[in-house]
Image (tube, rainbow, N blue to C red; front, side):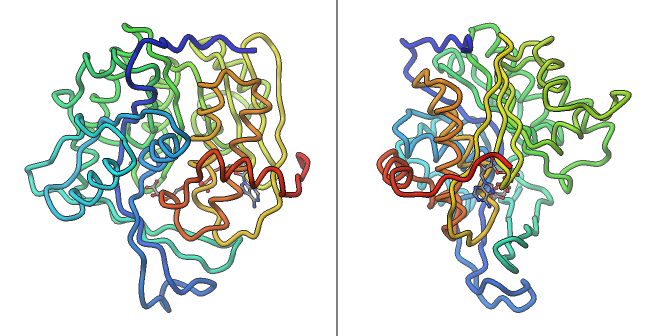
Length: 333
Ligand SMILES: Nc1ncnc2c1ncn2[C@@H]1O[C@H](COP(=O)(O)OP(=O)(O)OP(=O)(O)O)[C@@H](O)[C@H]1O
Ligand SMILES: O=C(O)C[C@@H](O)[C@H](O)C(=O)CO
């Protein structure tokens, strides 16, 4: 098992920190974006997606972020309000910054890409002034997105939030969420990622993302070696995702768990990680065995990659359980 001490008397379950953006998903799929005529607008940004997913599952989330002072910023906040997410700590930028846009291209179910427009984005203007100690100490858990470390002042805001979380015994969940286009160089990226990951209780990432973080090591690490490294810091749980092959989770007490996937009609692959994370985190709040939490995450991911959006597509517990009762399981491969 694992030792995560969620303080049950706190009103907020999971407070997300990081980007609130807009996804513009191609309406004409199975073709390159050059041939796309129209897009559908959804709330996006990995931490936003995970927070929305947690709300859909019945958790009480909050968010620490910054949005643009325009229609897109208002659309995002209104959408989160509609999902019963506390938005009192979402600041509004007044410098003319814009909302990040993620244009998604679905060439085929296996060949999807994201074109990110992220110049002068409001989310990276989150500052330490926007991070409230009182807000964080009223949360059971904080969810940090690695991309929020990509630039100042957002970087410093994340580290302050981490300090407050550690001070008030808030469980910290770190989704590596590595998006190369947001960073300047690999060494800078790994430096900041390591400084943050060393303070976190749960670290979730793909093999490639852990390899990026561990690039200063002499040799590439196995999943077990990666887990052991992070247990030497603050981690209680390390989850390593392997796409359609499944996922592995390790706990500090030396146990490991694997999860296969569910057969699904894949429309697009992106959104798998966010939906997996929100449902896995839900399982942690329910104090489930890790294998059950991983299976829940895998089911949520299978549902979301069969749908057009990420945020809108985040399922409820009823949807996940109905899916699990009917879907074909695929072992770890
Ligand atoms: N083709 C698939 N079929 C079924 N399940 C899948 C598939 N791809 C991914 N998953 C599920 O989603 C989980 C997370 O996927 P992945 O490892 O690709 O994370 P990610 O790279 O963070 O995702 P994203 O593409 O959203 O960034 C996997 O562990 C698996 O359970
Ligand atoms: O995280 C991003 O900025 C892109 C997301 O909005 C998009 O939904 C996605 O790629 C989810 O994995």
